[in-house]
Length: 103
Image 1: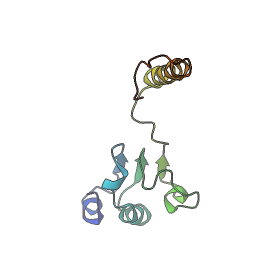
Image 2 (image 1 turned 90 degrees about the vertical axis):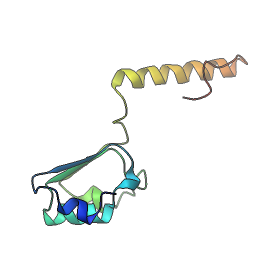
Image 3 (image 1 turned 135 degrees about the vertical axis):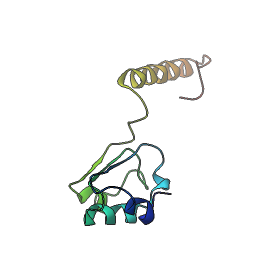
């Protein structure tokens, strides 16, 4: 768990990056560390809840960058996922077996 103790051991120049699971981060502790300058910044691809409410404090901090859970794949992978989803939809609508039931 990335909590108050975890953040207190980081250098003040540290940039915390989370692309794993939002639930492993104590977000109130992260916010406190960012506001106090205990760490320099944060880059988050996952948060809890997802998406954050528009008025969430993390979205107000100038030293935080949040991406919409896109860190899991490259542009090419996203293109292939989109093409697979489209093919599955067309085949399903035509009454044919889909390439895969999971996308």
